[in-house]
Length: 74
Image (cartoon, rainbow, N blue to C red):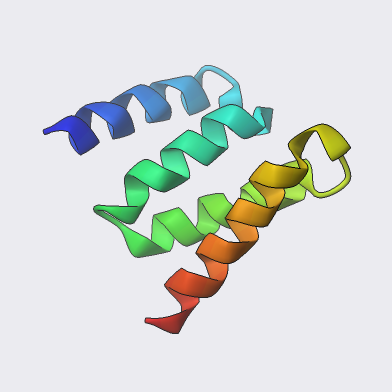
């Protein structure tokens, strides 16, 4: 149930223009890992796009890259 609520909140945030906000994409990607691997991978890739050139988000970018590698192994 928690994942469902997290996903719904994240999807609402995306719909409200959060697709360019790394925080929104990052949190929704984590939530999707529990329910939809393909959506999670797509959002992790989007997170890398949004963060890789911004030192402020270097940790988020590295986490996203690790999650992509882990999900890609399955």
